[in-house]
Length: 117
Length: 113
Image 1 (tube, chains in turn blue, brown):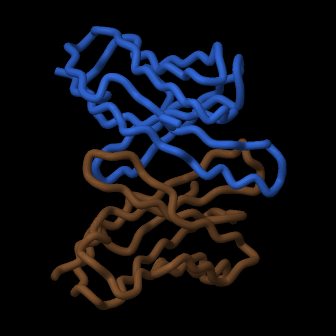
Image 2: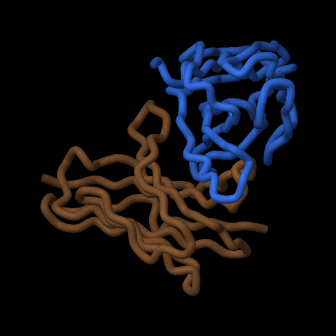
């Protein structure tokens, strides 16, 4: 199993450009999420999905879009990049039944380091 | 709002000693707490999970405690080795799988040979 894969590893954008960060997992996990990690801020949830066709906002969703057409893929779109979106982005997946007792252990991808000039 | 604090941004420990990292939280009643390890340039990797009704969990040289009265978890690495040098993150979750984890900012641990 490849686990969680992310592309690209690095990206430089100019303000106002748009792009899509790709995320895929081969563990048949229902739950997928996107985080950004900034110095001193920890991991902050951007968007998450509990299954194909279902997405919801996390703590910092503004400026980002997601969709979940398949169980495997969960792309993150930056609509109009801003310098404040310079960060390291992590995609994660987990096996989550949505029932009490489910522990949501997250499997993280290697990250995408994004710089917006 | 929920707040998670990890004791210090950086911690230096002599090789062979026990490293102890702290995770404190406020305005939250988590059902479980997780610890992750993150190496530079990589994504976090899950280490241990402890539930609110468990006092202690062990895995090889790792030990986690969870005190819901103090609202605190301690993460211990015994017989520490330079290879244990990394950033360690705690994360809190509620008892329903679709609820979001809340992560602390992490403690950067360096084991000095």
